[in-house]
Amino acid sequence: MPIYPLRQLDPARESVDLYDQWLGDLGEALARGDDRWELCRNVLTGIFHPHLASVDPTRLPLAAQVALAQMDARNITLEPEYYFEVDVEKFAERKPLLWMWQMFDKSPLGQNIHLGVRFRRTLAPYLFKRVGKNFKCFHYVEFSYGYNLEVGDDVVVHRNVLLDDRGGIVLGNGVSISDFANIYSHTHSIVDQRDVSNLKTVIDDGVRITYHATVLAGTHVGENAMVGAMAVATKDVRPYHVNVGIPAKSVRVKPNAPPEAYKLTLRKDATAKSDADVPASGEGAGED
Ligand SMILES: CC(C)(COP(=O)(O)OP(=O)(O)OC[C@H]1O[C@@H](n2cnc3c(N)ncnc32)[C@H](O)[C@@H]1OP(=O)(O)O)[C@@H](O)C(=O)NCCC(=O)NCCS
Image (cartoon, rainbow, N blue to C red; front, side, top):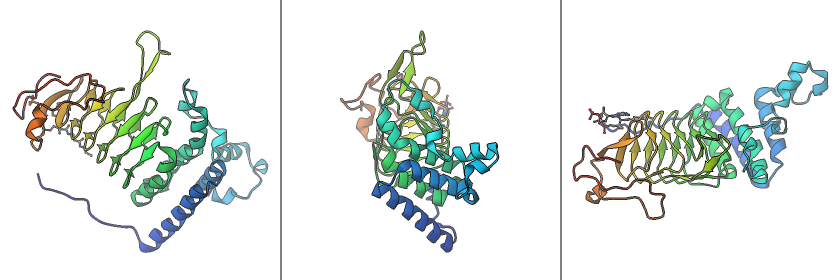
């Protein structure tokens, strides 16, 4: 297969200057510690209802008043704040930014890759537990809390991904998550839905979780491993292994794996649900 690096391109110069100015103002407001609820309300009103920004809402028809109310995160609730163990204080700090992120994505601005990636990069350090350099996130990505999400350097998250960080998610350096993938860190008892286990899910450096794949709570995907399209990773994935299917099983070790990859097990500090040795052949990597 040929190597296809991404093309370098930018939108029109004037628009880039405009975006830089707008994002610069937003970044400065966050760094100054401006009131995040007001910031969210102003940004979203500016995007969705700029002509109503200085109108007395009580003079508007009821539907318009309701529409304007959605610009203020104090007037809405999000699913994760109903969760029993939510850290109310940490969530409140992030809620206006979470809402701003989600509503930005639903606007025309959110579909613009150039602007969208930079906008999310501006918000991410204030939302996540940790985020490294060059974070690249496309539209319609959802988180639970944000404060339990750790992101390494050079991570790419494509559109429509769910990162349920309820029990904690760690994404190592160079991780890539494809469209419509789901990464969970909580699960429910099959007997009682209210019996919830929060389990940290760890995706090591260089891993690719490919499209429509799901990684279940508490799973550890070892470095440079890959979870194939539509797979459901119910158990740990060994480093350099390619796991596919439901439940996901290893079909091969990557050809660029070091010889020891055939024997590699997950790091000791990991939750090891499966770390059996594999045959010394690139293909048919064996039972998980
Ligand atoms: C996982 C993947 C990389 C495997 O590629 P590969 O190493 O070239 O493996 P092969 O195509 O030789 O397949 C090996 C075996 O696994 C099966 N297999 C491959 N991908 C599978 C998948 N996603 N689900 C189920 N089985 C799969 C193949 O049918 C084959 O089975 P067989 O040995 O019985 O014939 C690839 O199939 C895949 O899922 N790619 C995801 C692409 C993607 O999401 N890209 C993101 C774009 S942003």
